[in-house]
Length: 306
Image 1: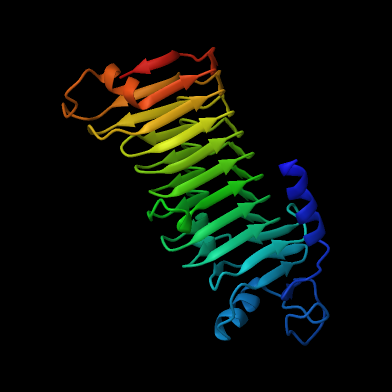
Image 2: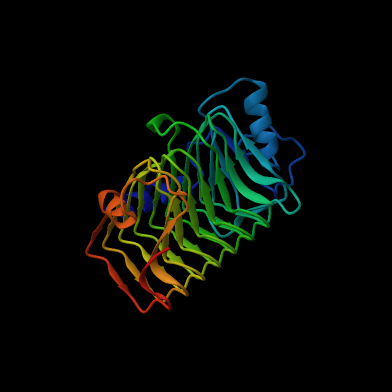
C-alpha cells in the first residue's frame, strides 16, 4: 500500500501540474521565466532564481532531457523529474552532481551520473531521495556528511538505485538514516559504508555484486536495524561489523538473506588494540542481535571473527 501511494503521488506529479518553476532542456523559446510556457533551459537557472529572490519551499519540475551541469540545492527547494530514466543530470568532470547545501529538500524521478561524487549532503541538510538512479560516479555515489542523528537532519534514500560507483555506493557519517526498497550494486568498494553513531534502518534492499562488503559499519554508538535485505555476490562480506573501542552499539540483523558472498556472510573485525575488557564474542553478544536470517554458501563461512 505504501509503494502504491508513492507511485500514485509521483505519477500525478510527473504530469507537470502544480509546480512553481519548470525546466526543459529542449525548449525553443527565447524567453526564460520559469513558467510552463517559457521554462528555464537549465536546472541551475531555476535554483539561481530561487536563491536570488530568497524564495523558499519551491517545487521545480524538470522535463525529460539531459542536463549537463552540477546543481546546488538550497532554500528547501525540491526537484521533481518527469521520468527517472529520461530526466538525466550528467555531471561528467564535475566534483558533484547535486549538492544539498543547508536545505530540507527532496529529489525524485531523475538519474544523476558521472560526477566524482554524484550526490553530497552537507551537515545542515535533511535530504529525501526517492525513485532516482545514481550511477557511474568516479568516486563515491553518495556521501552524507557528519551531522546530528536527530530527525532534523535525517537522510532518506528509497525506491532507487546506486550503481557502478568507482568507490563506495553510499558513504554515511553520523546521521539518522533510512535506506529502503533500493538496489545497491556493482560499486567498486562497499555497497553501503556506515560510520559511528548512526541511528535508523536499512531494510528491504538488494545489495549485490559490490567490490568489497555489501554493508560495512563501525559499531561504536550505532543503533541500527538491518532487516529484510538480500546481500549476495559481494567481493568480501555480506555484512562487516568493525569494533575499534569498547563503546557499545546496537545492531539488529533480522530476516536478511546473506548468501554467495566471496568471503564471510557476517564478519566481526576487531581493531580495538586491547581496549575491550571482556572477551570479543561476549562483547558482540551484547551489541549484535540475530533473528531469522538466512545465511549460507559464503566462500569463507557464514561467520568470521578476526
